[in-house]
Length: 158
Image (cartoon, rainbow, N blue to C red; front, side, top):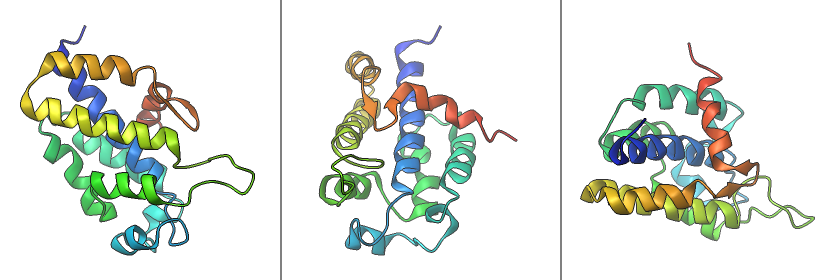
């Protein structure tokens, strides 16, 4: 059984994986400015996001410093969490029939929740972090409940 601190960090690491996996679908036509910050010719943005996001997760799965958890993802993609937030908020993610395969309102909310969780972890406010984790457990991405995507980190374990 995890304590509040362990659970907050576990969720933060998994959420970083999910958000960076999702942003791997970014292309210039979705958000030109943010796409220009990223090297979208890199394999990460050309079909390797699942494999590479999993590798990055495994590098950081024992890390407890939020900055160090996010750092390898930033290095690989060129994008900060704030860049991802902007891309989801401002990007053209909606499909022509009105739905979302990537991005969209659910990812905007998830990114905001992740940024809030990061702040609680930095402040070592474990009570607020626990309440944030509780709320995150009910959140969805375009593929269903976010917690169901946590197992995706294990698909590419070496």
